[in-house]
Image 1 (cartoon, rainbow, N blue to C red):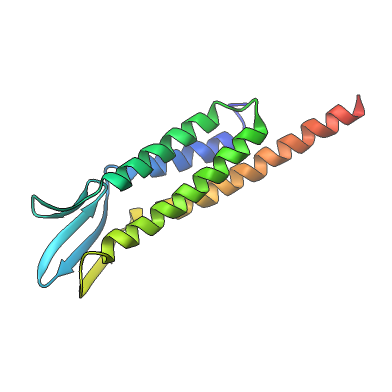
Image 2 (cartoon, rainbow, N blue to C red):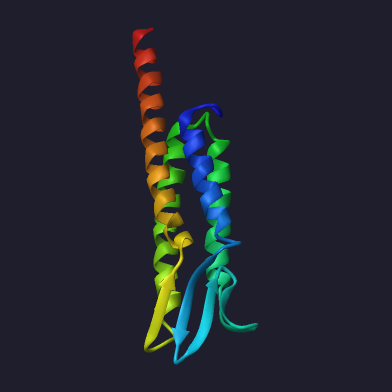
Length: 147
């Protein structure tokens, strides 16, 4: 149901991931040049160095999966499966942050920002939602046995 605690967990995780579109992930210093890393890519001033399209696709897919998960509250097993898939995507997104940061540069100094940990926090919230959904499923199955 929409008023359950797992919905709150999923909504908070969705908001954290959606905030990644707007926030800066890191500042990179390469050979004295300052680069900024956002969801749109890595920029040196206004010049695009690496395109961030894969990261934007991952973020969009994760947000859509969270939204779809909220509205499949009648199918709890499907909700759990969708959240497990979302957790896998979140871990992949976290790995992509590091790949984009270190892949194209040698001798780079990185100052990560707070939004880099948002996918890990979303993984924890999704795990808590899975546990709550599992408890609901167990409660429903126990009620069916009594009848």
